Image (cartoon, rainbow, N blue to C red):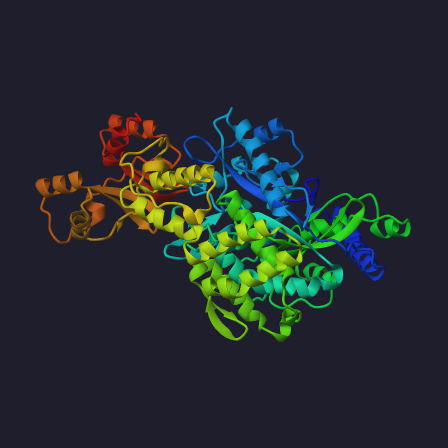
Length: 625
């Protein structure tokens, strides 16, 4: 997540000083390009591995800071939530067995976490979106106590002026509000870095944009969020909306999101891309900077351009231009941010080999992409690939082609040539790109998730299905085989396992009635759906009563029951409720003490579910009480 010692840009004094440094950094970068100071005779790769921490119940752990302290390794750093960490791999030259080295280093570092986590009921999971994340895992108590994260949350909320919103439609639909940027914490990615010669940066950047759709389409693995089946790579919509400061209004505004794919080709050089981002996106974070980049250049030193890098770190391009200094030498690189973490290390390394190979192997006819494709086709390809993965039909150089065919027929041959051109070992080239070919001909991790989740939901409640899916992903990761070789589930348990709070077993698909509806409507709904409890609403989401079959029968026995009786005449008005985080044991005791058969579940004054005696019996049969 970048520099941690920051200020909110609300502090005007710090902001003004920071802006001066930001403008000087742009000038310094231009001077370095003019003087040919930026490294151009070597190509390196690097990566950032984000990962999830889960407990033995397959739910998000909350102990990343403790794990990090015990690790005591500079390769590791915090992420936004306390159930995520990140590994920053050392850059290595793109040649020889570089991908085998990267794979070995990733295994070593993740194994360190595994060993440390083993003493505290914590496991490591690689996945784009952790299936078992629930809404309450996005409360501020789960945010890592870091100045950068708190400042980012403060300023983005301030600029938005209202709660963050998610509106994602796939097979299912998700519409939800949240008061912080922690929606972003649901995302974990495998960020890949490729050093680019400065004079070739814009052609390379435009090529990176062009191939984003098909590369993403073959690498998807995040179709689920909160139990909803959404996009093949839901992270794309989720990340964009979770950091979106553009509130809604009554007028039509044309503003660029901070998480964006861009709206046009890049022109000029890397400095022009940075200038465009500074012009379009307000400064949201600042920091104290002691040395001036122009002064450092005059003294013969290489500046780190701290202001520019901080601002660049708050503009979330899916292909991000980056400036850095290594061993005293400046370089520029492209950071690929759209690839999800997991589902295995070997899948990630294969994804990296594909992307790097296609980037390095770019045919000369694609050196000027604005002459080859309409940018809106490139952008549309990215969205279509995020939505439907390998089944997406993309526009490619004037023709329509599926992701599957585009990968196999066009991009894999380019990748083989690119890796050979970079002198990557033949063994690594064939081993890794064969994984991509097999995946393209078979099944992506996203499709594997969807098929198995649908199978599990035939017999299990949502929470049980999500935890069983997470457990299966973890077990498959331990085997180390690429995801296209994973077997489909054939058997499912029939009882709840390790459920502890109401949220884990409540029903969320609710049948409700209005207080002024005819009682006959409510009783017919009960018969049709074979249910004995119907929440009553005064307006959508607002509970005002409860109608039970017992009260219906009592009304029918004690008084004339005709077609004119409405729900409010016979409903229970003083309703006992619980919250999603109420323990199941406490909910059971409440039902026993009050001799009732159900409890509506309320969150932030809205009806979100119901727990019944039937749910409790199923829970009890699982021997959890």
